[in-house]
Picture: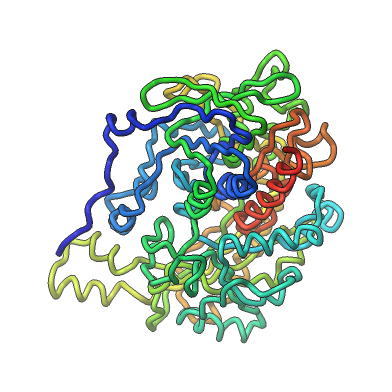
Length: 543
């Protein structure tokens, strides 16, 4: 058996020899190359502006993705190993009531978290934008769904979304760019039970190609979508990084920004470090901080000054506050028949039927019908000591009869749930590491109990033997970091305005899920992309 080569490790000599000096005459400096930063950079570069992207992590070689896939399926490697996670480089604290395992789902590199994301792209529902008015909890966004709809449609075209009608979703103006993936075999099993219980199933919108789209081929079924798609059929932000470069943007990798130099009303430069130990100053007319819900507030907090003693853009005192994530609820078991799990590496069916029943007591949630419950044949083969006929019998006995139902549940924003700075530890550049102080409210935990009831009814109707449950006592995050630089019209109660420009600084925009006032229960990336497109218009107008 032949194996593809392991991911290439760049030598110190090759890393240090690359030109990482500042770009002269830059109009826009974008910090972060995930979906938000890369989309903004593309739009502004295509408009003729001189754009530079500063990325803390490396640029990964696309030729190494098959080798990274092999890491992903081998039990000797943990999930962060697939994309060269470094616990020392990525050190963090977790001081909240609930431990937050930040590094379990963090990628530092060109493309950001989309390198390893699952690839589900739902729109928030209409009521998610008006939680305080409609549900009586949380806050209202300064924008509503009706005005935001065109940006959702634009984001779906930019990313490439395969989907179909959702009878419980918000109104649409046009079909998805590509047809939905067909229901899986296990979806058909769930459908029988759900029909009996009058629970509706419908397709999942996926940021992966069901057919060739935008120069990328259709999904070929590797099944390792999370944490790596070797074929490129699943969207990641390197698509837009390459588009930005084609339009003239410059990308500097391995250049963590250590602080933002500023005056009272504007950012003047991003100070960044290079692998060879040098420090540079990137000046620009406008700055876009697109570092996600943890690193964005961290950068603002470490950029304190006499003008902003509590952190940059923090006159409200809310930078880092209202950290949110989606909570996971799940249940699964086994059937006395094959379910063909792990033939499909992503979700093809879900249920939003209960979503808009949310109120003060129960949060919005969506159900997810798994295609990858239980171990895969590879996992079983690589974790046992059997060989030959004994291995075959082991696989036949243990593989293929599992089922599982998951769910995402909204967490309300809480001021005592926040991202701060560790007072004692710093990284290699002397910057305080982030402290994720995560607290979870009772509304979310009550909702998980409700979700578990529905999940149990489905599995019992299916005739499954229930073998595991994730409930209120052992729930965990979906790794969707939101809320730490919230958007709003009132500068005393928010960090950015509805165009994502900071209230305090005329030339600084924060573009990421950090601006979400509430989280809903939908995966956030499509909303991030839509906000990035909207912010790009505002930045273009300002320039």
